[in-house]
Image 1: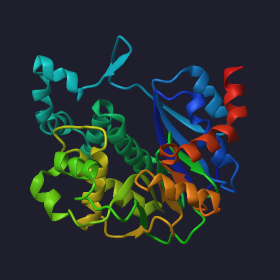
Image 2: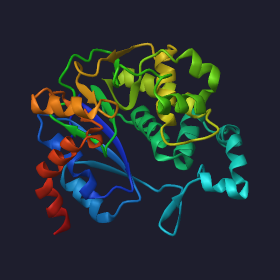
Image 3: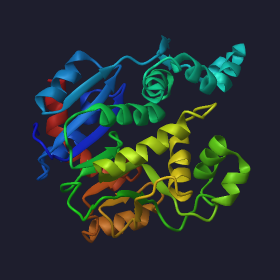
Length: 317
């Protein structure tokens, strides 16, 4: 993995994950024919992990999270325990505060994005950081993959499919909808309220953890995400998926397509029944470019652990 014009780009964020946890993601990508660049935004990780990443060809972007560590727990500006001291009421004014604090800037959206990245939870801040990076870099990347890190392994080049000038979202198990799957309904409701959740209840679930597209289309998608995320008055784990589905299903991303789970380049597994995954694994049908949420299934989790055991052991030696 190195630098060159018109390369493909993989972007991820890793907070509080050390090298041992990152091995399957990094090493599996290296084992494919992927010849582009992997950039990781890393926060609250050791210098040793950063060095291991660089030695593996990863472009490392360090950031310092706005966190307070206490008794092994990390508290952020949106942390739920703040409710005990009634400080969580401040979060409802975050959109107005970030707008006021950045109104002086030459590019208020860029300044507000950078400020919001500092105070947001990792699942939300990654979109701010990705947008800021792509909007400011001069490197003419061809295609971009935005991805989770902890639960992703690569089986082949993630860009090895017909991308075109579009954003590709990837569906989860299509037996569920945004209304019938309780977590997705809760995330959508937290972001937009019951009326929006009801209006989108019959829509399929696109996972916010992996998105692939041409650079221009991905920038357009990220701009739509950023504008919506900046409106949030609360942040909880998973709320980014509510926003992701909202912008896709309400037409705020003009050039996008949704890939089916079992026929597309990304296989998203959390909602797939374990017996189906086990059968597919035995029959060699887990042949997507990318396996996402593999760690929800023991048969795949054990396989990945065995495959990368030597690399993990080397990290501890």
